[in-house]
Image (cartoon, rainbow, N blue to C red; front, top):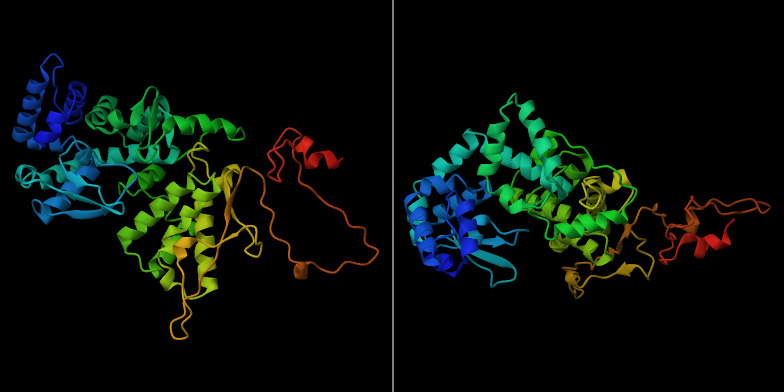
Amino acid sequence: MLEILASLTKSDLVEMGDIFGTEIPFRLKRKEMVTSLEDYFSNCCKTWLTYMLERDLKLIKELVIKGPGVSLFQEYPDYMSIAEYYGVVESDDSDGNFKKVWLSEDIYNLVKDQIDAAIEDGEKNGRFEVERIALGFLNLYGVDTFSHFLDFMMDYSNSKCDSRYDMLLNSLKHSPLLKIARFGTYLASPCVSDPMKIINRRKAFKGVKRSNKFTFEDAMAAGKYAPYFTFGLDSPEGSLVWSILTDLGYSETERRREMHNIWISAQLVDKDETAEDLFISVLRKKEVIHDAAMYNRCVKAIVAYANMLPKWLLKGNSSDEADYLEIVLQDSESKSLNVELDSLGDYEYDKDDFVPDWHLPQPTVSQGYPSIPPIHSESIPKLPEDFISGMAVQHVAPDDPCPCGSGLKYKYCHGKYMN
């Protein structure tokens, strides 16, 4: 850890002291700052542990169980833990698939007798609960104003019959969450990599006037189990996906991770190529899928779940609620839209062990227009020969983009042929 401290600038050292609960005067020389922080970490372990997020403490607990210098292999989450970022936990990300994390012997000796008490204290004094509610609020909206966040947290305090706002504010101030989430007048979920991009792109969805309203129970559900946050597990759509992941052989921890990844991928589906990431949990288990019916059931369940999840671009509204960014699976019989993913692999025919090479229908994303189901001639009833056919088109404003996807305004595209 001394190497990490020695590599930081004066501003970074001051920031690190603030995160971990100690004041480092900027007037000190950099070498003096490093010495001061090193002394603090060595002599005040019980104090600085109480400033860490629940996720960091539980990671340290796992590594204490492993022992000093023993690596824990993790899949890459959406954001790095504070403990890793500041070198309390050592890490190695040279492998693109997994990350190794471990405790140095010095840190292990400091925390091994304190970590259980720090976790117990966080649960007992309600600090973890406040943290989960705050994280859940940010995860549901992606990015929101600090004033809206504070109003929500104050209402939560009232719901707990606790009118001592100074205690709530002190709890939030004590936590490093606001320090890493706040920028200007906004706060962002740690899962959001580019908050300003979310804010700017919301302007494209003019039909979404208001932010969705969530309950404290919603926020709690969305803020637990960091870093793999989930939402809607008790909904019909979420319950079905959870059941499917169970059938595919995922453990409970793995199921939470996959449900989290679906939620995050659902935020990025405004580009077709990123929409395919929704189905990684199914593609990973291709050897378990026995037939096309099971495969289609898995894919369709994930689409339904993704469409009911809160979207950051839609101010916490789902695609089902806002009629924007709806994921649609195109007709698999359409050669122009059918995509065979390389990730499914190539299989040679073996009469004793044949694994079909399933085709994933190309997922596309609606920008607010209703999806048009494929028409199969055999499903159309035969009409009388003297029946005069016509075409019904749902109303599209003249200046709206044409639903055909040309990018032109409706009045300059298919609209000019209609009266």
